[in-house]
Length: 185
Image 1: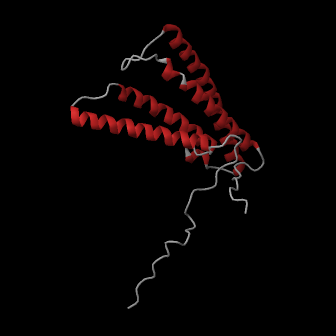
Image 2 (image 1 turned 180 degrees about the horizontal axis):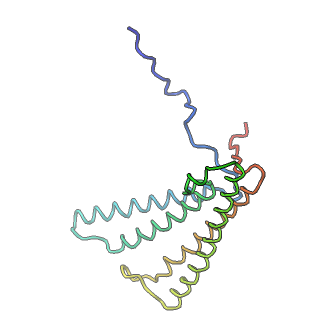
Image 3 (image 1 turned 90 degrees about the horizontal axis):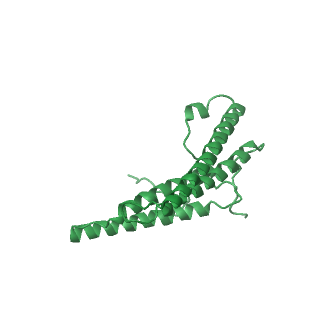
């Protein structure tokens, strides 16, 4: 009786690793590292709060407020990376129907709408930021100025606008989405 041959763990699988990244002027490592740092901060804050609550039956008041803020920033940073990689949420039923020229046209229209939406969000959230500064509103949990939190919305919305605009430019080229060859050899 022969035993089935086990795969060599050192042998590279064809599906191993991540796909090559897209060619962008601003490296996507920025969003990737921000995501890692924000997730680490969220984990540390939550873990510290659980420990304090377990041993003292008291909770840090600031953790919920700061965690919500970090989750919003995390969503915006990850959204920026998703648009740059053309990995954002879309309705595949419509996005993958028809000829390739129709699919490209649909993708360009969708990306143009995203650019317009996030450009408007940048302007409107900047107005909210100015109102928060002018009126001196403070947060309910720890009493810090609310603009400390709201200032990140126009910054992140502007970053998404630029990433989506870059995607639109790449989609308009004859061969959009050509991956970057990270290994020149």
